[in-house]
Length: 231
Image 1 (cartoon, rainbow, N blue to C red):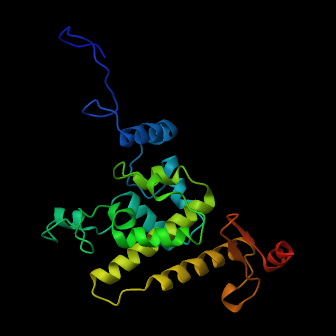
Image 2 (cartoon, helix red, strand yellow; image 1 turned 90 degrees about the vertical axis):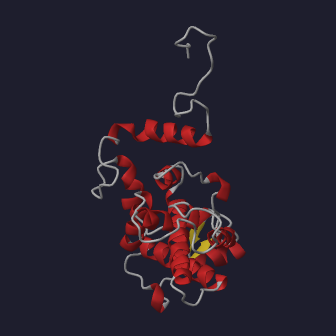
Image 3 (cartoon, rainbow, N blue to C red; image 1 turned 90 degrees about the horizontal axis):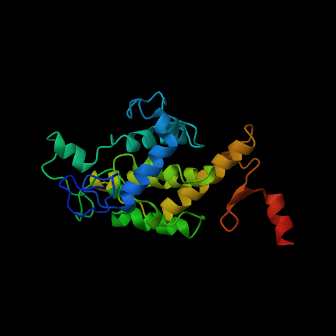
């Protein structure tokens, strides 16, 4: 930009207040370029008026998880930072690890327990690299989901939903779920979601039409397909 005092011109990044380039501001620019036509609508509206809300409301997860994702994307989760703002907590730090302020990003990808769960699930499912998620601000989740395919959105939302459950159990002084139970739960949950998607009349809980998820190719397969591939 040109200097207003006619000094030597400088190179500045107009998308951030300090005029210095950052990955966070670049994500925000790219996201607003794609969804800018609908940004005039309220970011907290549950009606889905902005096109980006379809990333949540049209995702292949149950309504409970969609509602969780919406609360996460609108910074409406009872994170310690939010509770501290309204006087419900005296501190804003994470009640689990105590290492950082607990915002709507920390429990899932910064807190050690959230990171451990994501890492364990990456050994089972094909997942985006953990470092590909960037805390770009309150709407970081929408920006992250915008980069993913349908099945990856489903897997990521399932993991984050489970992470919050584990976090809440710890905060409320309940027995901590062991990692193996969380991994088993998520694997079974995804298998059943895919089974219902493929055949709305199936009943996975009764063993009818059971399918499994192949972590190597990243797709759902039936037992017949698995047998055929094994040959």
